[in-house]
Amino acid sequence: MNVNSDEAAVLGAALHGASLSRQFRTKNIKLSDISSYDVQVSYLAEAKSTDAPGATPRTISSLAFAQGSRTGTRKTLTFRRKNDFSLAFSYKEPPASEFPVELLDARISGVAEALANITEVGGVDPVIKATILFSESGFVSVPEAIAYAEIKDDSLAGASMSSCGLG
Image 1 (cartoon, rainbow, N blue to C red):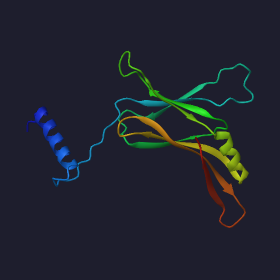
Image 2: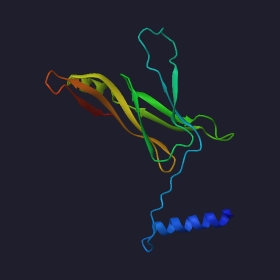
Image 3: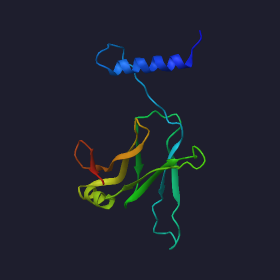
Image 4: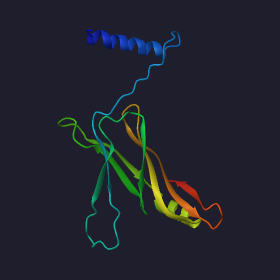
C-alpha cells in the first residue's frame, strides 16, 4: 500500500542492473525515456522568383518532437526544395532562464545534383526526404537525407520509385 521512493529507486536500479548482467536470469526490463520539452525544427522558405529583390525569406517552424515523445523515435520530413538548405533544431520554449535553446544546425547539401540525377532517369515530382532521430540519449540528429521521385513508364507495371542520397 505504501511506496517508499528511496526503496523503489534502489529496487528498480538493482533489477535493471541484474537484467544487464549475464550472471542473473531476469525478465526483460525495458526502460524508455521521454522528452521533457518540445523540440521544433526551423528552416527558411525557398525563395520564389516573384519575390521582390531584397525581400527577406520567411522562416518556417514546426514541431519535430512533442513533449512526452519517447527517445529513440525517428521521423521523416518531406521538403520540396531545389537547392541546399539548413535545418535548425531548438527547444520551443527555454527550459530555464539562461539555458541555451539551440540544439543542432544540420545542412542538407547536394540537392541540385541529386534532383538532376533523378530527373535525368525520368523521375517526376521529386522531393527531399530527411530522416530525423531523437536518440536514446536525448540528442537530435539527421542521419539521412535522400532525393525521392517516382518514375513513370508506359509498361503494364506503371510506376516505380527511385532515390538518391544527399550529403
